[in-house]
Every structure is written in structure tokens, then in C-alpha cells.
Length: 146
Image (cartoon, rainbow, N blue to C red; front, side, top):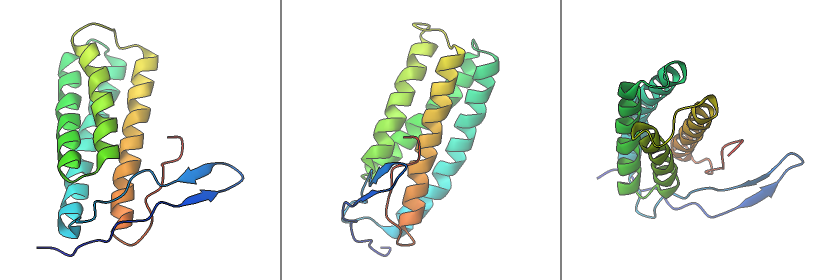
């Protein structure tokens, strides 16, 4: 079994620009080796999802791009959930729900939907970066623009 990581305490720090709060905590029994694997593997899924969203932005009716992105988000959501990373899991779920509405043709992918999806994916990336940073002892912080 890998090295255990102690949970981070919630902190609040105010700056002139923004109020920065911890967004997520690592579970008390977090396994550092599993988290390292998670970060490595999920970054690949994030790249795939981003490429799919960029394709969808250019071709709003490209259902294969929607499906590819949804598969990546489904994996991210499930894996994060199993590791107790609820912030990542919940945001991936919300983005997956938006794409589900596009896939079912309930809504058409407009420029604003594509922008929202790409910004949401950037936030998921930021949350995954938090996990990576926490492995080196840094606190988990809300990504800028969250």
C-alpha cells in the first residue's frame, strides 16, 4: 500500500483580487500512489476531452466528438468519485450532463455552450492540478475563475 496523505484543513485567505478558499480536500485515507496514477491517467482523458470539445466547437453536430468527450468525462467522474475527490466528480458530472443534452438533441451546441464546456473542462484540469500539487504538500485551492 502506498504512502498515506493527511487531510488538509480548510483555510481561507483573502487577497485584493479574490477570496481564495480550499475547494476540495483529500480523503483522510488517501493513497499517494493511487493519486499519482489518477493524475497521470486523468490528464490523458482531459486531453482527449479537450480535443473533442474543440472539434465540436467547429462542427456542432459532430456526435462522435460528443461521445468521445462524454466517455472521457464519465471515466474522470467515476475515478474521482472512487477516490473521494467529490469536487472533480461533481463538476465532471455537470459537464457530462450538458453534453448529454447536446447528444440527445435537446439543445444544439452553440458557441456559448462550447465556451461553457471548455471553461468547465479548464476547471476540471485545475482541480486535477490541485491533487497533483497536494502530493507535494501544497493546499488545494479553488482554480482562478471557478
